[in-house]
Length: 482
Image 1 (spheres, helix red, strand yellow):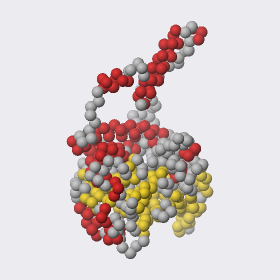
Image 2 (cartoon, rainbow, N blue to C red):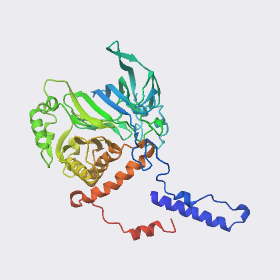
Image 3 (spheres, one colour):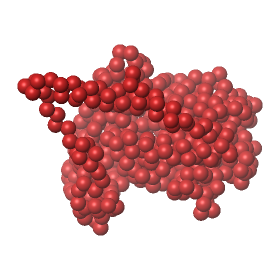
Image 4 (cartoon, rainbow, N blue to C red):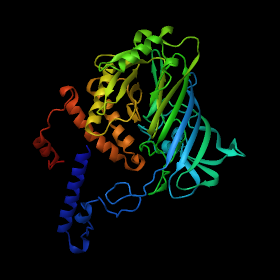
């Protein structure tokens, strides 16, 4: 459709130009079009500097700020509410003093008075909360700066102002340049939207709700040498631009839930049964999918730790730009090892409800994940995370470091396609950390390209597209009746 529209527009413009030539000189429209400008090479339009070379590589004094997070959250399943505490260590590697900082409050897009809500057309949109009228958005309980006073740990309340999906914090003194640090503690909560702009949400299943949680903590805005603070508000269509750091994530959920997350699970013995732990050990050595928690165990008490109402799951992911997670009592879980070129191992994991199971559906999701990660790791750059987790959800397809949310009803080539595409984003923008808020075409374009290569190779061409008759396509695109 886009190509046809462009062709139609081009033909229309040609018609206008031809018509204008036949008109008297006094009424002729003089075009300012210059094809030299329209088709000029756009690469290397500026000379390099000490931060960025003319060729695009980091310069001799390149810098990048850093944000490390300790995140603790509790899921209230009954009320669909998340209560959280985060501790951020922000490192200012820039040459500038920072007297204030900016943070993103992406959950605020779901407020009724947000910019994101305001731009949703009356006919509906993929973005927003799908018309949900609940009290959505972040509720900030407190923001404190962690510091030292007379050699003892101390907390100091900070002034802040919230404007839509952005929050500005005013500091008592500027963060010094070239390595200065700020440590913050933020307490907050929010109601989980049922439909969260097709990036998070809640899926109802026969054995319980599937909570897919993202944009779930206040996040540092990026401060860079191009724009300074990047504070363009989140409205839904555009995605994210984030600092890198290490994430320590602790999720407290009902004891009958399974939680999956970005990163490596550090306390498996506290959250899985002895049988499930044996299956995990087998999966880590197996190229074939091993079921960790079968459908038959979902409603049986031996399939979960006994004597506890809640369980805390502890994950860590390093050198990442974000972390997301999912929780449900309804999960079937299976896994298989991922073989990486260096000899290192990662693991492919799938979590899905019984409604999504099937040999032509989610029972193959782990095999799809494994194949995609292994292909891209050998073709481009080695997968950097300890796990790659695919979650069946009411999100049609969304990527986060080491975890993706895909449609629970997807099957066959559709499930392969969305799995392959979302994990393809690992290489761009997770490894290549682009500014998606401004340049979403970069990661989507590159990813769409590499998806064609992986699909061509997968399982000896199982879902390989048939060759297109380009002559027939050319005739259609140059049809004068268009």
